[in-house]
Image (tube, rainbow, N blue to C red):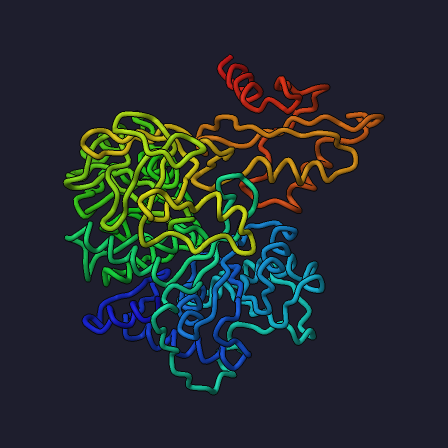
Length: 545
């Protein structure tokens, strides 16, 4: 990844690589930053093959660290900073990580679990590190009481001290042959079965995605600006808003968080030529304040992914863009973290409204009869499978799940079975239908009901829990938990707040149920299992009423 970035930057060293709250960095400066930071990690004891966890929002420090660690040949394990402390502990221990870069706002969580992990060093960074002086001062004053950790604990080191104390000058390791297929990044997902998995992605996968993007969006290059609002812990964010951006030679406008209320002023100030976002981002754009008279002719592409783009929203966004002097249409793409987020795109010559387009260059798609490898003809609905250069290496320490997801077909190629249903028409356009796997997509984030159920059922007062989705006006859908209490436990003594607090401690923000409901029984299948489909159907009927 670092090699691709360095190679691409040589032709435009003075172009802007990123901008962060007004702080600008050229490609030449970016490369020097990465080299300095990689030396600091080396001095800390990081070596080729070590797994270093990054628990950060989008900041220059987190993005630079990913490339700096890659430069050393280390593996970067990226975790959502809003993860609950129980989840963070699981992510750290699952990969036996000894080093952690964390946002200061997570220090309290880390302090409560550090003794239950293998962590030897924790680097504490602030979102204000690279902000202009006045803004950084204001940020520090606002958050000064939220970054608590024991300053006498030698396992912790501040970002500034981490950089300042580095004395080494380390050359980048040079990947040879098969090393390009080695693990570079670990991201996290529920896979096709909805249980937590650690997805191993290679240098080759990221660089292949960059090449695919350059070949597909041929009019994008140096001087273009990409809104880097999608998070680095998401394949769509890290792969497209950053690595693809750098492969274009474009400038990533780095944002640690997204505020829909400020979206209008954000667009007006930064004038990004490319928008990558989940459907809720585009919904927010149509409702943003301060864009009434804004000329959107600067936008080259508006690409939606991470969730299904409903036809009414597609029409709404297109009408909005047209009314603001833009000639572009919103383009829908499809991807999975297991294949680095972007697999197909409805754009340019491969555009067709209501579809996820055609596979990117180098990718192939087919549909098979669910549960088999039998390829179905055009026009028939089946499980969507994809083959190409961006497929994951596999799930770490989970050969059984890897074998279910990555399968060899009769053509001898390895295909990723996505767990999604689709139809490929006679023109080669892919029509997404529905998810086979149990998964809720809330504001573009994957939420896994089985994980929520497992956490709630850990409570001795709970006998059984079932989680389904319910509609939400902004997030599209959110989880709702139906709970049967254990025998002898009364709802008036064991409150929903007990469950809610347990969930907040052990689940990420997006996975905490939006609603809870105590029930006496749950619908069952003829085989005695909870009938999730019936429960989901009943919930939809209640919502309609």
